[in-house]
Image (cartoon, rainbow, N blue to C red; front, top):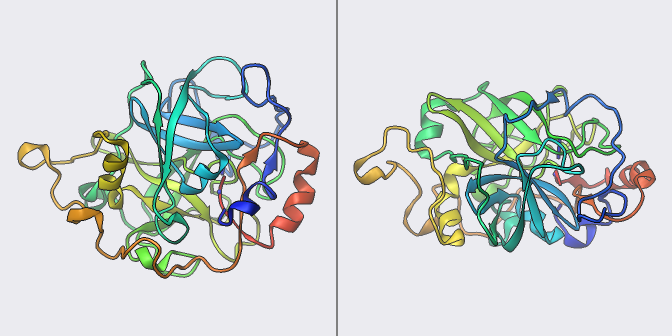
Length: 330
């Protein structure tokens, strides 16, 4: 499944795809590989709110309001033009396509929360937006060893090679719920701005950037994270575990940016439906600090978003050099 930093590197080390077809979707020859990193293909109708985010490359996102999508901050660099919901393969026919009105990355996302909000020109109908996790969601059922579900359209090979446009899923354990340990957590939003999950062959990969991490609750699956990047020091580009932005720290910013409410998991809601124990007033979260503060992101960052130009035959050569940089899952 999928994860950039320096914008100039994003497409220089991207996963190339062939030229787009007439309907604007990439026309890609998909290799036959084991689905996801240690996962399986998604059955029809299971995750219609997981969307393909397409532009000068490909990411993944989650529909959290009829016309609002949550994705990764670094995915804004690929200038998304459309999203496709309720599809198992974005290179084929079917699904629900909507065009992009605006894309807003979190301020200084490189050293803060690696997320972005996409507002669509028209609402997507026939797909129920997914609720996002709030403070009570994490208090209620999120801890070390909690199993979460990674879903996305990213690559399915631990070397980050080949092509994939199909939707896959994998179950993975949470190893660091507050992202306080080694691996590349952003210090300015630690503890609690991100979490680490996966490893041992269960992971997201390039193309999954911005995609959902689902947590099963008594109220059904809730999206509690967005795919950001792989762990520092991993033996392979994908498969060694990843870092994910926690939704409970960005709820207020999402709604301010979108200019409207989004679907939220309120657990046992307080008076007026307001979820107790949420973000601090003014959008500053405990342990978060100011955007653009000191960061755990060290060295150069390379992109992994699937590019809409070039030849798939360049993938291995590109990653042979790109692996020297810490990768994002896009």
